[in-house]
Length: 389
Image (cartoon, rainbow, N blue to C red):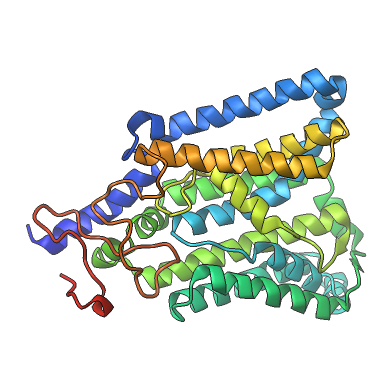
């Protein structure tokens, strides 16, 4: 068997194995152990809530409040999970939520919604989010700009554009049918929670049961090996950021329904909350591994934590400190489980964690060597003076 065919076979397998925790720390680094730990943490938080707030925490209304609050940031976090697994990062999600909400609540858009149907507002928000995500993806993949810088620039530009469109004013949603649909419930379950569940299930299927998901793991695990296996890394990177933008558009619709407004201040710090939830859920910031289930649990943990602090009249500053401590502890723990030490190296998969960045690949992706027996230890980029097999 040729070296090229060996690489083709091993590239996607390596990414999928990392995504499912079959490398590195063995069973303790697997998704079952990580998700079990998250469930235990969530249960402990609930116990603390019951002990400190009693019936106020355990009431049905409070539980539904937690789920509603988790729904919007949860949808954003699902998109962020795909981006980070693919080896990138998206700092613009909060600004995209604001831009989509403002654009979908302009007088022109709402007038069109009244003349046609409120679905026009939903369509507008999703299109705005997906187009902004497309711009992010093109700049990162084909403009070869670091994901951190590109999405940071989009954060500033999208937030500024939202302020210009809204003229720094809060826009009120006037369509009662729109508000009635998204503010309602089905069998006692809020519509926003149902949307979150549907997005999470769709994300799980896409990540774990499709070629797109396997390619995402492969690109995040080793972009150079993925390229040699025939995956169009740049095109796939664009798709990941478009997916993140679509999630931002959906989240904007949910936020519009919950607050009955569109505002340039919507989504403030959503990027940090989403990244924190994804990291808590066990997704490696260097890419190549992660789960949607872990992300959902991470969102619920942070939302429940905030609810417990609120019910006990604790300051938002103390809550921020607690969040920071949890994030640091989670990152250190996942690195310990994945690599056997507190080092930020990718679990061994035949590549090199410190290799040169692949041109046009997601930020954080590396061009390691092949996993073929007898193959080169690291495929160097042309800029490094070596040759690619």
